[in-house]
Amino acid sequence: MFSKETYVSRRQRLKGMLNEGILLFLGNNEAPCNYPDNTYLFRQDSTFLYYFGIDKPGFAAVIDLESGKETIFGNDVDMDDIIWMGPQPSVSEQAAEVGVLDTAPFCKLENVLKEAQAKGRRIHFTPQYRHDNTIYLHQVLGIGFGQEKEAASEDLTKAVSGMRLIKEPCEIEEIDKACNLGYAMHYTAMKMMRLGMKEQELVGVMEGVCQSEGYMCSFATILSQHGETMHNHAHEGIITDGKLLLIDAGVEINSHYCSDNTRTWPCSGKFTQQQKDIYTIVCTANNYALENARPGVTYRDIHLGASRIIVQGLKNLGLLHGDVEEMVAAGVQGLFMPHGLGHNMGLDVHDMENLGEDTVGYDPDQKRSSQLGLGSLRMARSLKAGHVITDEPGIYFIPALIQQWKKEGHNAQFIDFNRLESYYDFGGIRLEDDLLITSGGARLLGSKRLPITAQEVEEEMSQRD
Image (cartoon, rainbow, N blue to C red; front, side, top):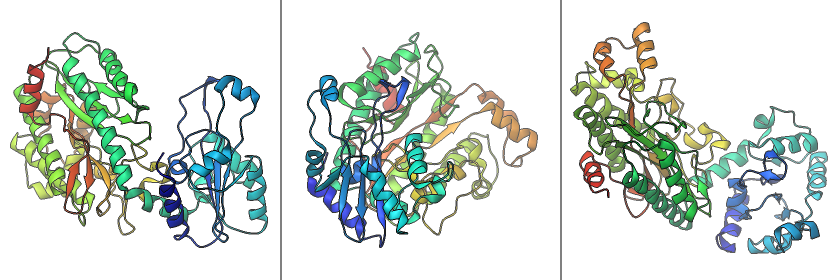
């Protein structure tokens, strides 16, 4: 939790961005795993955390834009709660810590909302993603299931995303901490990886590092020798000589700020020449983004710049032929990198995607592409100081996708499909760092950078015990 003044200031700024009605913030509740008392690890709604800071289930808040009144709704504990949880601070005590004077039992929220609805006042809320909150909105406000997204307030959503996109110094400090722990997580795995080891063993080691000092992993760990599968959560493989191990993992620290890094290691500790050729292209694209991201440049243009590097590199290897600009315009790079260059990061590892990818990641004058790869770009905006984004180019050889393009003749004038057959068992390479956009460019978040060049990787892996 930050200082009381931080939350007061955030809410004051938000009030100045909207004109009428009430703002509703629904916190999250416990989520049962397999029976009601056995719950998943609780995670508070990030927007509720951002404005109200209370990291416990069963809370909601309302801001009245006309009167300026702020109210937190929640229930004080009873003796049954105390028996199982021990004494807890009262709702009013917790509210005071974030500068809110008025509190009420949670059941009173329904009356406030129905009274506002009866008076024709606008009730602003952001798009919901938890089923219990959508059910609550249905029961209290009569919003049909499946209609919550349309009923959500575009004005509030844009105001919240605009504020949360630009990170405050206190937030950047927390993200640096998360990235330092993420570094330890990945570095430990690199040092402990051995041929013959189960992938799951490395997952356990990494997540142990995370949980020893952090809250949880910021997303389900991706660790696989089949890096061509974007989100491969299967960990049953045995670390095998000649393979590449792609690890995409991050940390969420106790303040809930996140890290997200990817590295691809040679299982033996040394790249084959084929692997090094592809790895070097991806590394060059990663460094291009770091060196060229700056205020006033769109991240869409950085994505396209990284795409040119990938296309040129593959052309140099004889896998592509033709004019690089023509190939990029045609979307040839999508065959090898079917995802965008990066996304926003902060209190959510994919920051605010519950508010809508286009709302958060695109300026009003930008439209999402229909091309494979570019169409998956989550962050395309003109960059501003304070943006926190990931830089994660990759090259993947996905046999089914290659065969589909070959069968359809898609971009066949540029692609040597026959030569690509020798890469069918290659896998994939992704290299991901977390960047802060500064007034003069961009910097890496965290105090250290994971080994990035092929030479650095081989040197570090050669020094394993």
